[in-house]
Length: 167
Length: 102
Image 1: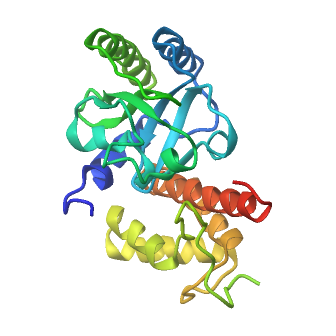
Image 2 (image 1 turned 120 degrees about the vertical axis):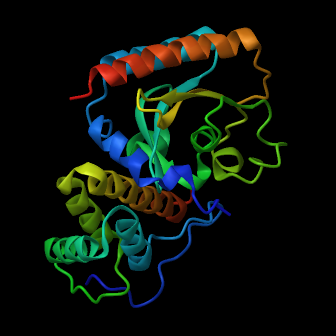
């Protein structure tokens, strides 16, 4: 059950996403490059720059994403690992999604094969968590502090790019 | 035909149901004052060619509603984009299931 005042559904946060114009069909080349760098640096097949909306996760940029999620450019928000960071404002790491009680019944795990996840929040200059820069793999995997540091550094570049687009 | 004679099926294995009119109206109410939300709903219905008092809609028509919301921009556009992703995910996954995969 979602909390009463769920940050995912906060109207002010959604207004910030609207102002930053993050939901277009054109993929920002720099965000795309950051996603690719995240995946290749951490040696994982998939990376996303996600924007967590009230009812869905939107893929603003990605590396290695295929199938219906790539076609639809997202999925229902209740399947989103990244939404956890919107609520906690912290990095979220799942070394083995198939055994973690929070994720083991998630269709992205049971049907799509996600097995490990690490994401860092993308927090705007006005303090709203927009989404995450995250990496996803198909095998269980631990993430070191150094790897999270790498993700945070790339996430800082992503938010700088997003802020640079602010009208 | 844009109303449903029977409830839309839930996508097996994903437990994903088609978005409902009620959920769309609740989503609008979360980001707009009541009178504005009602006006937006009326505009979306007109754009999709359905009556405002409709209670169930097929996926194709729901997607037209979401696309109209997207054109409004701002927070309503964000909500429309989220609805669009949910509806498209539902349609794509149901089609994959009906074709035998996953």
